[in-house]
Length: 343
Image (tube, rainbow, N blue to C red; front, side, top):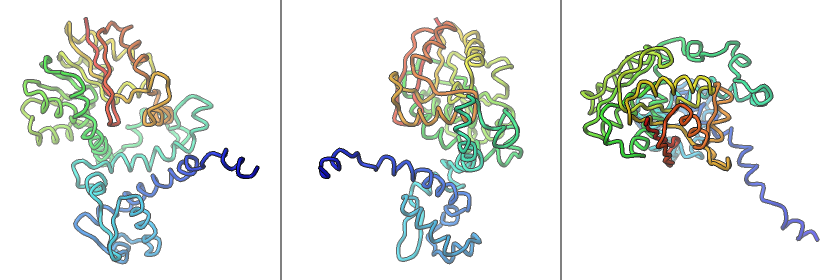
């Protein structure tokens, strides 16, 4: 009887893994925040040297470093700790592909707001006021200095370096002549598109505070002569002329009235047979995944007015504005792609 009952008990590994998951995230957040990976950028160091340099308690620093090694972020050899390749590329603040800005934002803001997930679900609203004492717009409150905004945008640039090359190749965009990336931030999608399609020109359209960084990154790219950076608010200002408009990680921020307003403005600005390229992570039609999309949808509840959607839901939004010939392409990166055409 005992053996039969034991055989019917499921493995606890799933629950145990989730129980520990937040500890892994926080270990990486803390190591980035304390400057561990930057301190190891040029070579390995001992616990004692790192603790002295970063002004850390030596025994506690050793525990953190060993934890990072267990996560694959550091490697250890005879008491000397070094960055792994992943840490060097994504977790050092000098790397052009760094995600440190978004990691620090996750540590300072998202981590704290997720503590109130239960209240977000009960009330159906974001947690900015409960956590920090103010409402949206979040950026005007949370990123009060140019330095903090710059680092956050570079974190999003790190995401873009991963996703944008896949998004612009998800469909053949060779027939389009001019791409306008609304909310284009650092220009990563516009750059990737122009690199992929030699005859394409592009405009990065974003709020004024993002322009200096976008211009700097665009000017250092191989396609600088084909990418223009323009300031404006896509809800209020005239949209640049283009036969292809891109929205990357934009629609999931908003409720449907705002989405309708933005899509209508895009539809009216596009010429006949113009296209709209959307980059979002698409929820499966039976709503059983993928995990990234489901967790991001909860994050949107915590942080914004929006949520993630299935392709059918996006298709309905697009068709009621007038778009047709709507297609989806899934990818292995944190964004999928939708292409819709104006008749």
